Image 1 (tube, rainbow, N blue to C red):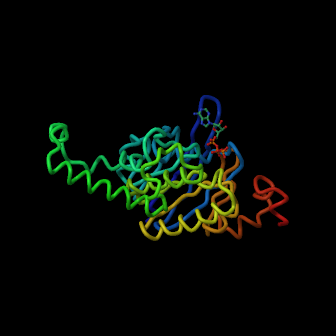
Image 2: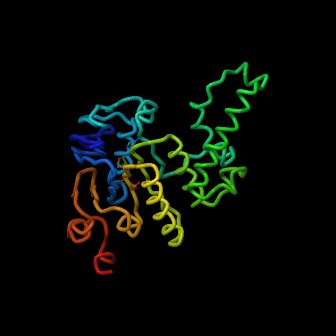
Image 3: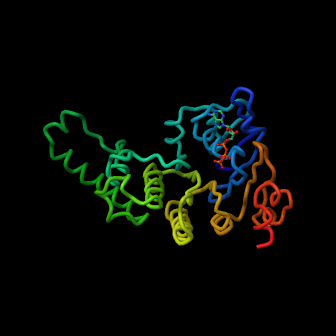
Length: 257
Ligand code: ATP
């Protein structure tokens, strides 16, 4: 049984068809690349899966249950988390607080208890801080825990977004251009990090990425979108060698590299 299934999904914005009749399914533990030229509809697909946009036509199933047009918060609770192409951290909060924002569900005390700071509050707070630190440790950011999020270099902010997504305890993780703005060395580190978290947290992953080296390193299977439509869904070797993909996306340089 697939963990995620898109069945003839279409999204229109007025007259623009951003995503047209897209169907694909992911088995548990897969890591699939989602590629295509700028404006192909990749981020729109993430927005449809996560409930940010309503689907115009079609169906999305998660663990065989329809999540089509559900509230985004419910979709997170069902086990789907994401990172964003344009980093969306709470800039003025510390690195640690950015993780804490998604751990609030575990803070089972009330305002009264907070105001007089009962021992229970102190205990839960300590536990939450430790949990947040655990996630920061996984992405290698513990030493920056007290720094403001926007003081971090770009690559570290992307890792913080990943840590925050992990703190939501997802089963399916959607990564939207995690290597954007990273230098080659940082990209390599990111590849290792994605492998590590996939194993540690038993994740299924969809990766949107323009850095082809990252996609080829991580994804045995790749879905290619072009002008909102499915161009192909195949192994990385098939995709690498398909003339339509080379033409639409990879370009001559990559074809002969
Ligand atoms: P990139 O690689 O540049 O991020 P993408 O493949 O993620 O591109 P999308 O951002 O999904 O592409 O955009 C697909 C199409 O849908 C584009 O033509 C875009 O202008 C359009 N689109 C996306 N969101 C909206 C919106 N909220 N309103 C209108 N059109 C939109």
